Amino acid sequence: MQEADDGKKEERAETEKKEESGAENEVAGLKDRMLRLAAEFDNYKKRVSKELSASSDKGRADIIAKLLPVIDEFELAISSMDATQDQVKGIGLIYSNFISVLKSAGLETIEVSGRYDPYKQEIVLAEESDKEEGTVLKVVRKGYMFDDMLLRPASVIIAKGKDVEQTKEERIDLEDKKDEGE
Image (cartoon, rainbow, N blue to C red; front, side):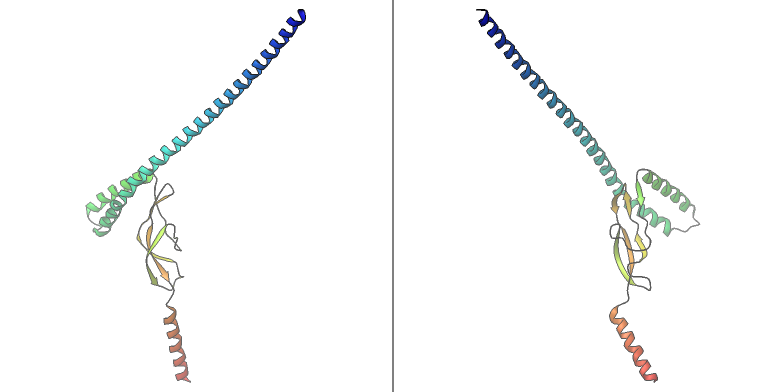
C-alpha cells in the first residue's frame, strides 16, 4: 500500500512539475507579448510624432507659399517708386520686417549664380551669349525654399550657344572673302 502511495506522490510531483513548467512557459509567452506590444506602441508614438511634425511643416510651407506673390508685389512696388520719396523708406521697412519674419519661420531665397540648376531653377528664356552654354544670365523671378522644401523655383534666362547654322554661314562668308582677297 505504501508503494501505491509513493506512486501517487510521484505522479502528483510530475503533474505539479508539468503544471509549473506550463505556467512558466505561459508567463514567458505573456512577458514576450507584453514587450512586443510595448515596442509597437513606442514605434507608434514616434511615427505619430513625426507625422504631426511633417503636417505642421507642410501647413507652414503652404501659408508661406501663398505669401510669395505678396513678396513679389512688395519688390515691384519698391523698385518702381522714386528713391527720394519718404514712402519708399516706409514700405522698405515694412518689407524688411515681413521678410525677416518669414526667414525666421524657415523661408530661404534660392541663390542663383553660375550654371543652371534644374532642381532649383526653371528656364523662361535662352538667349545667345558669349558666355558658356547653360550659364545663368538673369533672374526673372526669385525662387524660395522652406526647410529644404522647394516652394517656387527661380525663373532664369540662360545662355545658349550660337546657332550652328549661323556659324557655318559666317565661315562660308569668311572663306568667300579670303578667296576674293587672293
